[in-house]
Length: 75
Image (cartoon, rainbow, N blue to C red):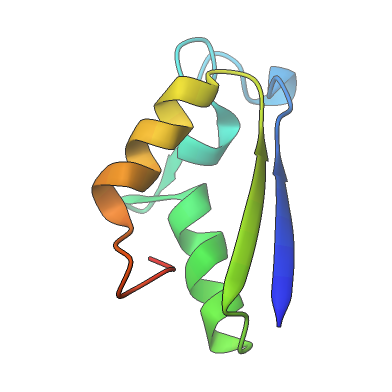
C-alpha cells in the first residue's frame, strides 16, 4: 500500500517553531512530526511513502537520508 505525506506548507501557525525548520521536523516529545507520521503509517501496513516537500526541503531530505535506510523504508 502507498501513502503521500503533504509536508510542503510554510507552517505559519507553528511560528516561531517553524522559523528555521519545516513543520515536518518540529519535535513533539523528542520525535519529529515526520517520524511520528511514518511510524504510524507503517503500523497501518503502508510500505511506500511519497513526501511532498517545499519549505526547507533540503532539511527534510537531509533528515530522511540520515534516518531512513533502503532495508527499512520507513522510520
